Image 1 (cartoon, rainbow, N blue to C red):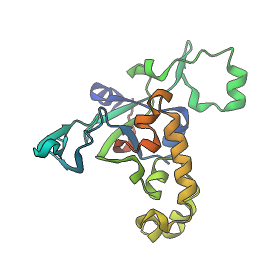
Image 2 (image 1 turned 90 degrees about the horizontal axis):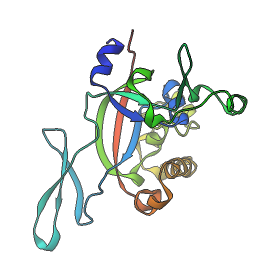
Image 3 (image 1 turned 45 degrees about the vertical axis):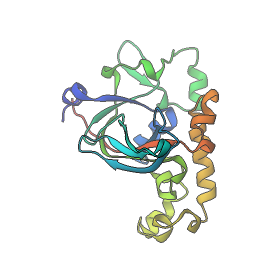
Length: 222
């Protein structure tokens, strides 16, 4: 598809510099986002995907049962454009993820970086297509999911040697000797994206419900 065709329907999805770099390296194919608002505490945790792409679960307050419906931020097949920290000079757009600490320090008085939330469609350089959407508890993440998040690279050797069919990648988390290190790194990255005032509700220890959004990178030509 052309860039113009993708942008006509693409929805914005923000990523910090580290995750932008992971996408550019083709190391990231999934992202987790908070379910807002969180389902009622009385919900049984068993979700069903509805025909319209939304999800529902059973809630049983005071012995009555009703369906609770939640709407994902993206649906399978949606095109997305990545919002990232950016700037603009006379000739083109600049992206902070392309620069590292030393270069950023040298450029701090030269380039005025603009918040990713203010990035317009026309400045986008990365386009994605949603391939799957599901909902789960944050702490249900497995080792292979953490790697797919683009956060923990130490497992890549295992995957290259044994493939994703290796038991440590499809079994329980405690079957992998790297899991503790991997989950600690994921926990730190996740908590860094949550406001301090909301850590009790959405932080790792709160184990919130999250959207799991799988995607593939799309090459959008001019």
